[in-house]
Length: 503
Image (cartoon, rainbow, N blue to C red; front, side):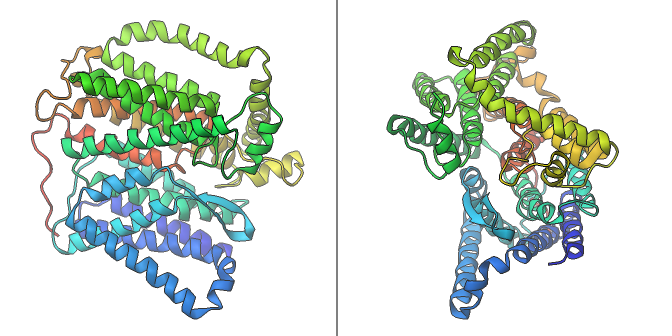
């Protein structure tokens, strides 16, 4: 596929899903989701066409694969139409799972194949429900929706002059467009007590499983998948695990989410058995987190817990205590058991990438080098040898280098809109801000307040994690938290769930 077609595909795909977010017409929304996902699939297929040459040369096998994929989507959509709760639960369950595949140029990437299947089935189910006049439309906070539309629109437009159009097209096809669709699908779900409880069970259960696998890896001194991590473990005094993930830092990110959700339930539980169960789950999950040895995750988790404590007890005392405790936490991580080796090993490569990224941003301060261009621009500027890392792990620096002040403005606007959405009006349900404490079993809608607070704490922690390890809009967790947080922000204080809009 030519670069011109890839640029056109990026712009058209993001325009389609943007229209789906902005419209109040259910048929337009469904059409935008279908068209956007179809164009994203075309972008991906265009780049990977040569990679499946062997399969294409065998027409029967190729047709069988396509037919099998179609059957999976149809069966999944039918199940979602029969049991609507399946769609959000399957999305939550599939968020962590990645499959390592070769894409254009033989480059291996970790792709969310199970999640893509759920999204595809969800879009098909939504299209059918729309034709039946059963689509559930909800008015989400406008600043959040506009922030997302602006960010993906700017990213698509800046592929026009990108130094690496192919990489940008992959980001659009694999991440930005499918995750915008994911956002829309989750925003249409009815997040009532039943769904919130089931979602909580899925998140905590997966966290426990991931942690137990990580603990088992540490005990056995063996890891999965990642040869580079295995080689790194051979040369350091500490042993890092990755559970079912490729990267220990992403492993830590998902355990962090599980811990914050479980901690929220613990703080609002009115049942002793539930409270004791959460204590056990927290102990096991945190044990698994320790062996991931992700400094960024520890700092991010601390921020999330500080937000949680502030909203549960006292914002004032949290503001006083957090800086002091943060200094101790960072000091312990910096000492790294007394040798300091771990900190130098983890941070020295990142710091050079940050410095190089800042220099790139200074050279093109207004518009940057174009979407997804950091690696190529950094390698050329610093004369990096093949095989060395050229991927920035600091989201603001990446945005500044690739997209300049234009991208930074869009990025900051999205963060502001997201935080406003998650925290606006939270005083009424946050005891730490003077709100009335309502335990999880107190009232029909009592779970909505703690759920809002959990989303706010988790997203705050995620922002910190992306500053230390990037992957903001390319992680579906960001989109899921914003969708659920946006729905809960719209629903807390509302008297009823939205009516089903007629197509």
